Length: 135
Image 1 (cartoon, rainbow, N blue to C red):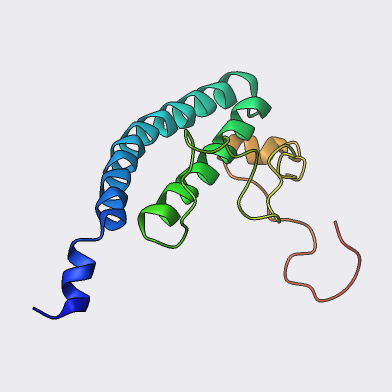
Image 2: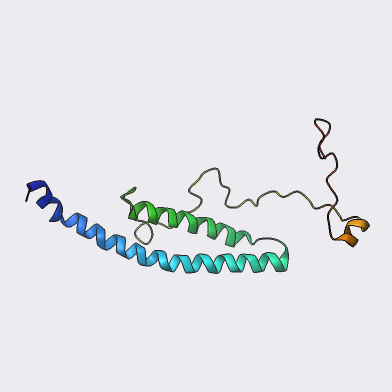
């Protein structure tokens, strides 16, 4: 057996990494359940109040960052072990994401009486035109 292969097979650090990866595989399963609960709660809150809960939105974002950290560690992209061996991630992995700010949505126009009877929304004004003012 070549010496390099023997050294690789007997490297304690690699075997310890395997145990750490298996630990995070188990934690990832728990995190999937937590994420599903967050999704269901957020959906129910949106149904009842009409708005998403800001605290749940922030937690969901940090949970996504945690998942990213775990996968990066398990796939050897990073050598930094995630929580509970490091602090809980504070925010999004992508700095372009805004964890605390809700996505801007245009205000809904009231339905016309004709649209209410047919169940359809009228076509937006200015559709199909080029240029002109925005509505």
